[in-house]
Length: 291
Image (tube, rainbow, N blue to C red; front, side, top):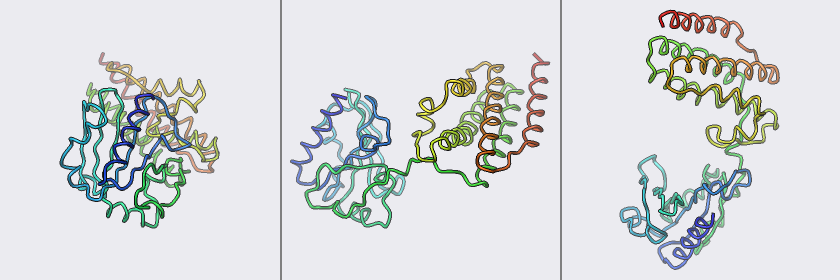
């Protein structure tokens, strides 16, 4: 944290002296009261220039704050943003995500009816030489709050989960580890398991909580028993272990899904689970018979 604080001070000092910079904002977790902050938390800095063109094309200015060892660059066209990005890792291991606005584009963003997500998560104005932020709405910090699912979304998630488990089972039966991992980790874990666990946590906190991105804070909010069940859904390269992880996922989704169904007043697809479980077990037994 010492190096991060020193880095922030150097950025502020440099910006105050730089006539081309008109405003500086600190955003994201460091200014979000709901966020978990530690020594690994990044600096998210927004620099507003009279004209940002030179600072996008020339990276020499980045070395004013330390020695860069790695960097990712995105210009305004990369995601159709109103700003460019330079994400820099310095040799003191402080990571700084710089957003580079032109004054014109920044003001257009400020004048929008709704606060953009990056600002609604949290921001702090560090420098404002021209009162550019005077009409900037206050953050609600609600962007990252877990939202209660609709019945349609809940039913779709469970239907898709049980459907995609069949692809994992077929891949394991074929000894196709890469595709099994893709389906289990990319699709099932990310698209179905993580949202379901988020809902499990959020319903216990009256839907007024965030667990950060992709389950980063799950361990903080789950019981030790539930966390052990989550751990069992992870596996290595051994096919048998992946079978075990697949059924651990099925058991976890079944448990949480039924609990949420009861609390939310939604219907749980019992027959779908029963039929798919039989399919998974038959494929596993067929695989084991061949070993």
